[in-house]
Each structure stands twice: as structure tokens, then as C-alpha cells.
Length: 118
Image 1 (cartoon, helix red, strand yellow):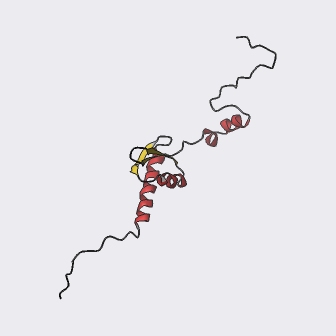
Image 2 (cartoon, helix red, strand yellow):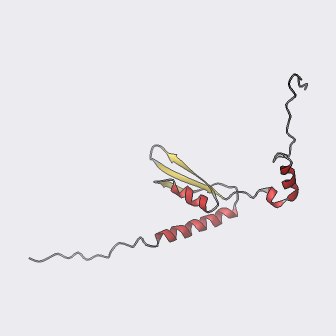
Image 3 (cartoon, one colour):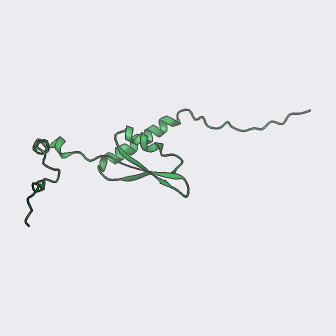
């Protein structure tokens, strides 16, 4: 009885793929840093939403959106905009005093029993 031999190369090793994915995500973060505050669709039709967690660990804001029909996820990410209070000490002091971010004075409600006249 003779045995049949099938000649073929083995499949590629999965070892090291995690590092490649990590490098790709680091490159994505670098691109997002060039456009802070702007959302980007980074992955489409994913089987899970776990990529959003990976981007959050790298300092990005990330969201995943589920498509109910296909039960897949799109992942969006952005690099957060720099807070002006971190850059400008004047703005930091105003915030510490309770001045809102838009700089407008807060409107106070009239005391009980007093009608506001406009």
C-alpha cells in the first residue's frame, strides 16, 4: 500500500501579528494627533468593538457603532483637543473662579418671591 503525500507550505505563523497591529495603531494615533478634535472612521465591519478600547489606552477618544442588521461594528477615534486652561494661565484662573468655558457670565435665577423683569 502506498501513501499519498500532499506537498504544500504550512500556513503563516500568527506569532508577531499582535506587534504588527500595535504598530499600525500607533501610526493611526500619530495621524490623529495631526488633526486634534476631528473624528475619523478607523475600522469598518469589525466583529467586536474591542478596537475602541485599544485606542482609548493610547490616549484617544474612541467610540464604536453597532450595525444591527450585520451585527458588526465601525470604530471611530479622535485625538482630544488641548484644553486652553493648560496653555493659558489667565483662562485657568478664570475657570478656577467659576467662569464658564464660553466666558459668558452665568445667569442667576431671581431670589424666591422676586419676579424677573425683562
